[in-house]
Structures are given as structure tokens and as C-alpha cells.
Image (cartoon, rainbow, N blue to C red; front, side, top):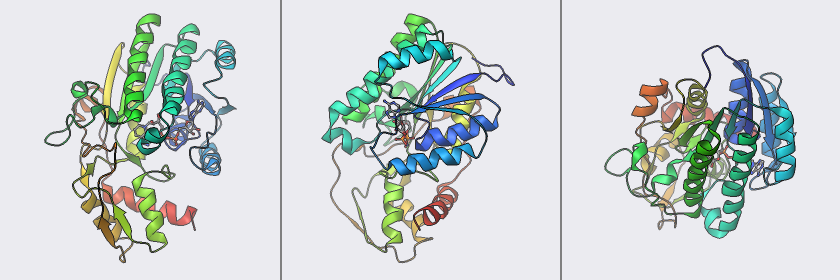
Length: 323
Ligand SMILES: NC(=O)c1ccc[n+]([C@@H]2O[C@H](COP(=O)([O-])OP(=O)(O)OC[C@H]3O[C@@H](n4cnc5c(N)ncnc54)[C@H](O)[C@@H]3O)[C@@H](O)[C@H]2O)c1
């Protein structure tokens, strides 16, 4: 892993995505030599991905390659030429409902693509691999009465997306052991902010409210540990430094927000907000709640954004972008 002040070549996969484009911006500003790959998958608007990538370019120079991790031959050849020190693997197809409709997609894009990348990284001598996992690996096992600690995950997942992330975590550990590179698994908790993925609850609500439509909400008792994008990119940045070996960290806000609290915060921006609760959605966990003690103690991770502050920035972006 890196020492403070050391700047090395870093590959970010999925760098045209929501989290990837923010991370690219952040790491370019820190002075790292950044290369980004993305296949512009059409899971959501390709135009939004291209706009995100353009926005990232405003922070400074980085290399971009349109490359699909499923193209193993091209990937291996390319890796041998490039010789990265660190890989931050964000590329995936995200989202729970789509994983129920098309589970095979997740086996390809979230597991097979990860294995291709792990092998290419190992063969080319990468020294640190950072994997973007998800709070969904906790299933319903915890998070209701208490916050989820890293060791609470036991594979008892409730959606194909979560199964793919849990499986991919396991492949990361296998390849870290086979090739000897350092491994950091980061479990992100519901990330939002400007350029948020359009399939997520917050942008869906904001778009409906901008059109003055009523909100139909799935589960009155649900709560999410919504995490503002800048806190996530800070956590990823911090994970590049420190001791060697294999580590897993939650990156969340540490504060679960109920649907009522979320809609109250949105009503501040959209006073006409009307809502109605409907039945529960299959595959969704009831609550997520991150115990961030380990990330805080080891990495110095301290989320800064309240839901009110984060929403204010997200609403400002959405009203300008979707105007
Ligand atoms: N956003 C969240 O709340 C959240 C929460 C937990 C975990 N995560 C994880 O974080 C990562 C980034 O999430 P995001 O919200 O930015 O999603 P995103 O869909 O915006 O970004 C993922 C990017 O990966 C690219 N991609 C997908 N398959 C690829 C392939 N085979 N080759 C090259 N590029 C490919 C896509 O085109 C996309 O631009 C994902 O792994 C996701 O599962 C996200």
C-alpha cells in the first residue's frame, strides 16, 4: 500500500459511472496518475455516463479507454502494457430489482468480469486491489436492532445482486491469496449526491417531485444508511494508505434514515410533496445501518454530510441537470 505523499498509477474501472466519475475527479486532484476504463453499459442512460466523464475531465488530465472487462483477451494484453500499481474496481451492474429480472447478467458483469480483472491484475504485478462491495451482503441478518459490523456478513443474502457481490468478495480473497497482492474490500451503503444513479430511490423521488407527481413508497418501516458521495470518495482515498494485507471496511454515514425522515427532508425543497405507502418490494432488505468504527479507527474515516445537507446539493444538481 501507499505511503502518504506517494503518487502512483491507479486504474479505476467503471470510472464513467456515478461513484467512479467522482472518484476520478478526486484522485486526479490529489495528483495520482489515473487511468479509467468503462464500457458505457446501457443499464442506465449512456448520455449521463458520458456527461459524468466530461465533468470528471474538468478536474485535470487522465487517460480513458472504452473497454469491457468481459473481453478477457484484450484486457490481459492491455494490462501487460500498462503495469498499474493499484486497481480500484467499481465496474459492475448494480441494483436489486434488475438482478431479480436478469440474474445471469450479474453472474457475468459482477462475478465473471471481476475474476477476469483479478487474474489480469495478478499476472501483471498489481500490488493493491480495492473492490467495491455493498451493504447488501448483510442481508436481513443485522442492521435492524444494531449497526452491521464487517464480521456480521455470513452470506445470508436476499437478492441475486447481493449474492454476486458476496461471491465476488470471495473471489477477491482467493486471488489475493494466489498472487499475494493487498486487498481492500469496501462495502458502500446507499450512495447519493450529484450524478446519482437514476435507478435509485432519491433521484426517482426528486424526478417525480419535479413533475409534481405523488410518491408511492414501498415500506414505511424501511431505513437506509444514505451516504453522501464525497464521504465515499474520501473513504476510498483513505483506503489507499496504511498497512498491508487483506481488509474489509464498511463505508456508510453510520446513521440510518427512515423513509419518513427522507420524505420530510425532501418536502423542505418540494413543499407540495404527497406520498402513499404500498406493499414491500421483493429482494429489498428492511434496513441498512453501517457500523463505521473499524473504518474510523484504521483509516481515519469520518463522514461529514447530513442527509439534509447532501439532499440540498443533490436537489440543486438534479434541478439544473434535468431542467
Ligand atoms: N451507488 C451505490 O449506492 C452503491 C452501493 C453499494 C455498492 N455500490 C457498488 O459501487 C460500484 C459503482 O456503483 P455506481 O453506483 O457508481 O454504479 P454505475 O452503474 O454508475 O457505475 C458502474 C460503471 O461500470 C461500468 N461497467 C459495468 N460493467 C462493465 C464492464 N464489464 N467493463 C467495463 N465497465 C463496466 C458501467 O458502464 C458504469 O459506468 C458498483 O460496483 C456498485 O455495485 C454502489
